[in-house]
Length: 96
Image (cartoon, rainbow, N blue to C red; front, side, top):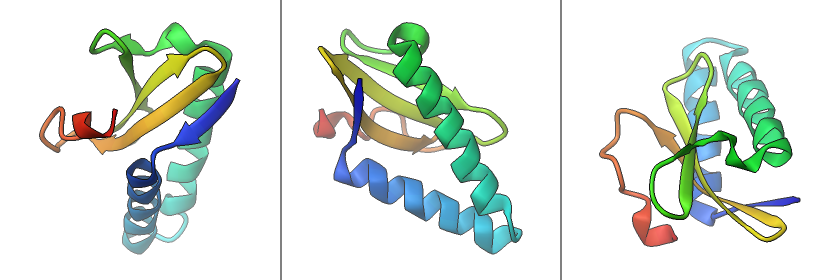
């Protein structure tokens, strides 16, 4: 199964990693590592995330206040948001 990032989700990912790295050296790398682990789980078990709409799911990132918003269609997983959980829910819906 292939994973495709929406351009805004990719931007959120890099901005979050940069933010954490600015807070504590190495924390940005930790964020990236945790996100990669989550993506592996999603690839292996696409239905493991919590269903939040008819087509989208959310998977929480351990150790960080972030969730991955994604959908599964045939052989592709699309990441719509790397969402800070303090943001307004649903801000990403225009990306679907």
